Length: 400
Ligand code: GTR
Picture 1 (cartoon, rainbow, N blue to C red):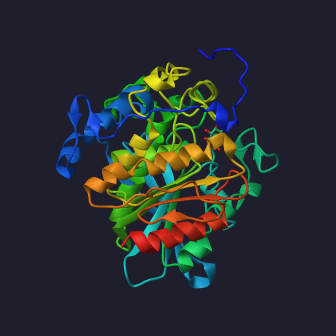
Picture 2 (spheres, helix red, strand yellow):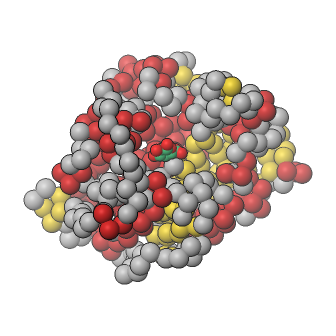
Picture 3 (tube, rainbow, N blue to C red):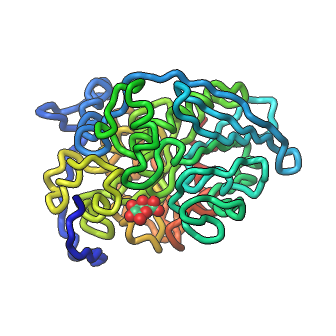
């Protein structure tokens, strides 16, 4: 039950104090000293995150049928847009938009969920308008949390489709609400309830983050079945709450070639032990469905968490990871995101790979790192053209 107490976010660095982070290389009483050791034991961390925070992921699979609904050329013939329907056991359907550059070769792609329906990524009228609950509520585009025709292209700037296509990548997306609508009881209409028998989990065994991460993996199944996509080069990205889900998906499903966290903040890339901006108390009270109730119990005793988010990031090893913040998004604790990314290098070193190194937080719009990258840009909480320019560069350089 939501507690009632006023919440005032801390934005004073001097009040954060010194935090001591768990060592990713100490698992139980074991000290990890080799790649083989890490590979053998990383599941212990994953299990801790599942038990304490994000909930279980299904071990069983469900019958998935992918049907191509429509296909057309877009962007003056530079790309082909396909609408796919994924059906799960005849009980849940999700609509997926796949946009690929015209190419005789297999292409790498960016994959991410969207908040408010596929129609928000572009003004193209071939994209069906999402008809379930969306968090957007900006009349007349979204009336009572339902997308209207006027919402076409509303978030196009967050997808930068033409730029992505011109760089030789494809893009694939679905609305998170096709897997679970984003409100406290949204699970009743989503995969956690409708596929409970098939997936062998009760709704309370997992969370909205789990449902979205599961959806991303099913989209990856679809992507890997499409001949023109290079299924080994699927770059997962997510903004904000969907960045949290992307990280959870990337940790669980190692088929994702690289992972981008765009301002995922608390419960995503940011360190929970840092009391700065959003906290465990705030997030679990505002969004009880995103995490297990057990995670809420760590509010005000963050130091007792057996992990912190740098370990979630470390579970991506040895794959490329990009963590991005925005200066205008202090709520997400940019410094906490940076420090978390910096702490990944111990695990990457086991693979002979470099991390961010011994650096301070960079200035605005100055990406640092290579395989592990970080930037903080100016501007507000968003994913914009600048972010995409960096992600495209990162994809070209690191996903080979
Ligand atoms: C906020 C939430 C953040 C972040 C954000 C978003 O309200 O506190 O953790 O997820 O929403 O998704 O835009």
